Image (cartoon, rainbow, N blue to C red; front, top):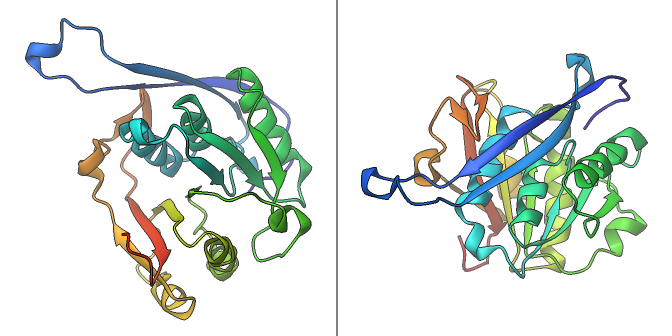
Length: 235
């Protein structure tokens, strides 16, 4: 989520496949993504550490993305969604309908990365809207750092649950920053009949202080999980 803001700069995120000593003389797959970030930190329109980790997960699993339809919620500057689109997925970016600047940010990220085919819609967590009802079938839902304010947790979960009831095989891939040991979504997952699997960062080469040629995630404690309906076969 974000609010209106003025100045911006363009940041480069460079994703590359790790190579061992024998492979270093060979060309390696690489993806460069440009993100226009707002300079004033109070606006929340820049890439957060969780977004880089989630984008790394998408890059690591890029071979499974072509042909998938992916929805990013609370997209903000849209780094994960942009990476997914660059890797061949059909992507829909969304952010709150209440702040048009958020959707403009999504548009700017798509424009600067030459992705005219990415759809952008307004979706406000916890609200059943025409945009939500008219969404096509999705395979994967993305979100980075949406579990930021505890009062928003259930709105996020109910939106994900609504989408999964319409798409029973869909998965919710999400990263979050550990800010308090007292904050948890476990009770909400149980209430809404969802299950989650923790994904170790080392399993997709994200257990580092720097990713994608960026100083993020730094020393922040980031976790990743995959959420699905309790009755689903995966995870």
